[in-house]
Image (cartoon, rainbow, N blue to C red; front, side, top):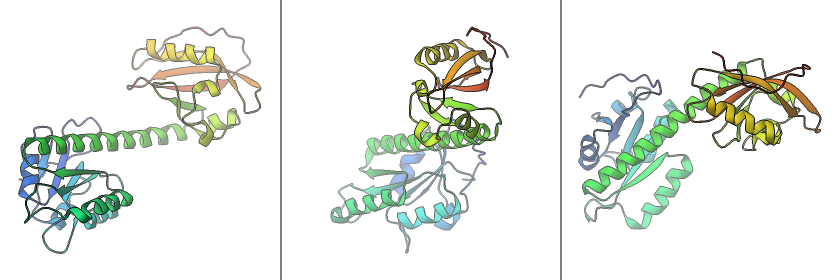
Length: 266
């Protein structure tokens, strides 16, 4: 099967998966309509595709000298982001099953090194379903992480103070300008409620404004933020909703006594 080029543009719905190992794993992946499965002839051919695929699935035991952890290490030398799922054999076949005595230590070592996921092969449809679920989860997580990193780079580059807020109202990250304005350390802000900087009343209004604003629109008004020493800073606030229900908040210090009120705009 020839490999289709994938550009990782984050709206791809079918993950491109390359597999190494047994016919059982290849067959399980081939049976799924939720993945675009490719099986190169050997590990070197699979590694040549890193950067074009969304996930690598490798057996613990491979033909020749390599094993699943060696494949993982080789993938990481090429990419820090492509998820790697390792499969161990638990079919009960005495000629093929991984030794029970060392499988647990192998899995611990795999996760210690940073392997993204593990599935135990037990044969039949449940194995295919378990493998599909694991692949979908790790690919979605990897895409989310890359999207957050891309958004973070964009926010950090902005000269205005900006904070990104989760759907639950907690700080995801704050750019240097925001931290400087309120005399805060980002390391102490991340994970804290937005109300740690903006009083609860303002925070609730900002959250309601984000929920009521259409995608692609912005809401503007005024709010108050508190510096690390507790002194208040009145700011012009611009709220932009995010697809997951969170929002970004851009603030600009102002001395104007403008009432907080809705002003949707494009």
